[in-house]
Image (cartoon, rainbow, N blue to C red):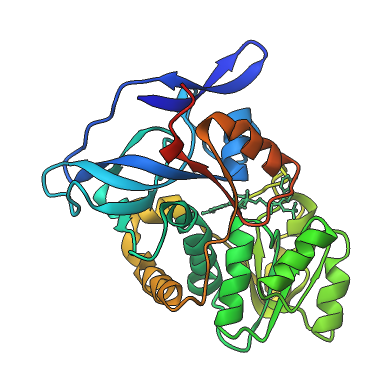
Length: 331
Ligand SMILES: NC(=O)c1ccc[n+]([C@@H]2O[C@H](COP(=O)([O-])OP(=O)(O)OC[C@H]3O[C@@H](n4cnc5c(N)ncnc54)[C@H](OP(=O)(O)O)[C@@H]3O)[C@@H](O)[C@H]2O)c1
């Protein structure tokens, strides 16, 4: 089969479509013929070597999120050949014609959901829900600041906070057009990464926000921690800037009665999936009721994956970039 493989060369990393061995199902697992896979900025950072976090040594197949049809099932798998499913891999491996996954990491695709939308759903919404609700403690009436709110997780978090009746949904994004997209998704007001502190102070009367969803890293993390209201929680999920947070002084936590927490959806799915059941139930109900939408911003072919990468690099896509495998791979 064809897969998008990352390799190290003397001049750095590169990824290309290559022929690799077909996978077979593990006991309790399935093999899925991929019809769509979502490309995230974190995939690009993993391909190019700037990801803040654990990545396997090359060569490895890129990508985490996919949707398609089960073509083989191991003993005691929860799905059968012919089932439409979508899912998320704990490690990279989804940009391939066939993906082997444990049954617990895939779900039946709702009939009304296209494969393109299904591929874009899991990381964005499950991460947003786990971060805001399970870890961040967001409830109706509370205030939230969502960073990078025109991207996949950010846009999903804004939608969720809005439908969960958060009292105030503040957002950041990298350009006026992207801030407008965040407001269209449900943000009360938005600002850039340089001036979000002014927005938070102004809109909260200086009190600060109850929850921050932080994914940019570096100085954005450090400044956001100072904007938490007493007993507020900052949930950190990544560092899209490529720079980890560096300056937070821990005494700030007890001096201001605030918490900093982290969540990694791949780890939770692989190691404690039961903790995510309330999130899955809430999200699938909201999806069925049409109250949240996956938000595919750009569809590319496997041969056009570079176009998707460049679109993410130039930060022009509102929502998710999805690779349509039904048009064939790059071979
Ligand atoms: N912990 C977890 O379980 C988990 C799960 C999923 C994702 N994540 C992390 O969450 C972050 C967002 O993921 P995503 O899937 O939403 O990604 P995405 O859709 O590809 O969006 C990335 C976002 O990052 C923003 N950004 C800020 N600084 C950037 C920079 N220097 N270069 C490029 N983009 C930059 C971009 O918005 P602007 O251009 O508007 O700034 C864009 O909206 C990533 O860091 C990812 O690793 C973590």
